[in-house]
Image: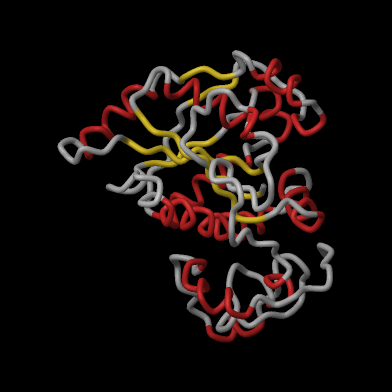
Length: 273
């Protein structure tokens, strides 16, 4: 069972966006729908009224990011990181939720304890961040054909072997299925970098230098996407997905590696901020 604080139900929010989170496959057994358990707390839920595999109590505890203060990274309060960044290689980034203690617990259950039942939950939550990005394209002067593919921040080979999966890749694949967008690997990690949240901003920047390189097949993958938008006057737009945005150093380094070789625009799509 994953812990749950005292929630404040966002009733208006739930009624407004519930349709975003419905899984593409309809649940067919009415009896199962009525007796399904919440994927987080294990409590009973009614799927005819609740989505994301959660009971309403767990859903109401999610700290959705509803409004942003920083137009670059989507942080809901003042951001000291973006104002200090000399060059931003991604257009902007949006996240689904604040990374509070409950969200840390949910992510740890998935990443480190192998609770695979949470993957559809996370991909469903990412739909919210996706809609935030789409909604803000016209305001940013980026109207056009929307987004063309999803990519993800890669893991080092040794870390991947240790964990057995890349959580960002898994989320990207599941989200791509929901949105009917192709998932295109663009990067590989050249070396392991220690956990970024434990480092200063300067240490993050130094540690990430040269940590990524473009995959050989990336040029061909983007060229095929360019054929699909030829003549529309809009560049290929890539959603680069990761689980947590801390300072944006990883996203910016990945976006730099991509954009210095490929004619694309990179946008960040994060589960938590």
